[in-house]
Length: 636
Ligand code: ADP
Ligand code: MG
Image 1 (cartoon, protein in one colour):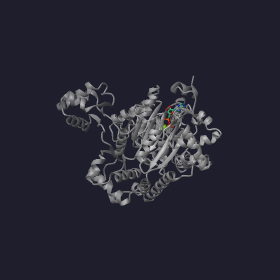
Image 2 (cartoon, rainbow, N blue to C red; image 1 turned 45 degrees about the horizontal axis):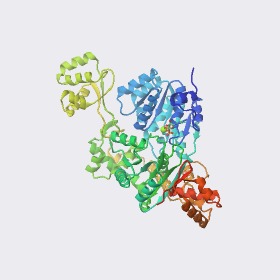
Image 3 (tube, helix red, strand yellow; image 1 turned 30 degrees about the vertical axis):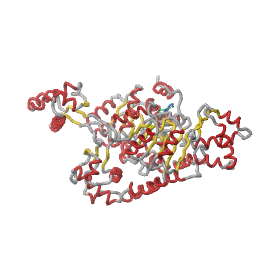
Image 4 (cartoon, rainbow, N blue to C red; image 1 turned 90 degrees about the horizontal axis):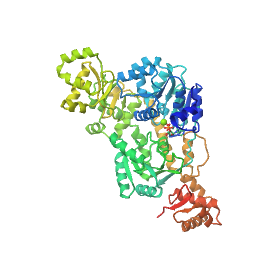
């Protein structure tokens, strides 16, 4: 008998109940509606589509922007016994074909798909034969030109939608302003969708912003005041390392993380932090995706992010367990100047964009009129050095070229080389007779990798090189030759980031850039920067409602916990009264005293006033109130 949604939740995930909104979202999909779900990061969006997909017939297609995210979810679903495959740019034509053919046979319950794969011929050919339960667009804000993370390939989604009439669609995102929400509905042609939105307020999270002369001192002060797991975000890679070292010198257990480290190093560092063997991780915004650590007590921004979307997402990694947590932003007056200068850096003048495009084509030695759908190794460092460019300028120009649909910079993710044989066994035998110098490598491939003849298989050139006692470069040459001769399809390992040209190379002066759009995006970007600045500078508005309002929530309720709320509250007591209670508290506090004892000792002051001062001291990280109600004095 078919299971209902509660039984599915229990059977696969072991959870007893749905979180707020999940059930409504699931029912909407089960009733065949298009659905837009806006839930904060960590709110449990995946279950919203995974549960109904398991109840509906057919395979659920999930469009997702990052291979790293797809791999996480794939691994998780597999671990709970659900059949799933991923189709991304790291796969060969044959692999994609096999996955889709298996899916047509009904082998998969989920297929995760990179949006740029939507246009692949084999996908278009086989799509009509697939029985699809639900079409899911995860991280749906990527479809909006006005959002903070626009990915042009998301615009292709609507095309498959047109060839799949009647199939319900679900779009999910954690951060969308009202404008972006409208854009999602319009671009995905789901105007009749039911929309579900969870509040952006996080009742256990206390936001605060500190303007200081020494950011480092403040950072140390906070980390000493609030114990427990912590993430410290900064804007550049070098600084992550420097900060970790400085914290260690101050006897704070810290390590650093950024995307420039090898996958192995990153995994190790991440694991140590997750297991609480490392307390503080200083990192760039590359850290945190797909991580679900419940007991993070502080997320500290050592540098301000570019927009509130990012800030909210990153800050929201604190306190997932629902216990008290702090989101702190530390800044120096010079940081404001840098933020104000961002827009012109992020959107360089058009002639400069064209010049970088020209340099790029020269660097890749790509003649005019070719290059469409070709991958190239791209070493940013080398490029910047050879052409004496500024790396920030280059990466921003690449982003613009990406938004304009000219090229795509791939993720730096480890994918081993792969081989797929293209001819039958008899022809292979004949081939070996004609090309005796390639016979050893063919034999080695067949012997070393079981099933290689029938499936696309990961291979390791180093291993073959050891077996044949031949240099790796020579092995790679031979594999390339086999590919040229049509014997195998060889997909070399991509160690270096790849740049994919989506269009043929254009003559730089004729490079098509939609100027209206460029200026509109630039303006939109400025708007986001302004909002970030507004958040930093505001001293009288509740920070939690500032964020909620930014995301279109019309709340006027104050959180009562952010620095601004506490300052306002403080003024409900006269400063003399406040000071008097503060002195009394300080005189009475010994480590381990409970709030109740203190309230008792401080009579006749009323407990409300005492609480007010306590909360204030806690927000200043002068004291810490633990869950069992005991107070620790952290001021020195
Ligand atoms: P999002 O995509 O919204 O950021 P995820 O779907 O990754 O969030 O879920 C975050 C975490 O919440 C996961 O560890 C998930 O298992 C957990 N979770 C989701 N729904 C529930 C639930 N109903 N009960 C308990 N845990 C849940
Ligand atoms: Mg998610």
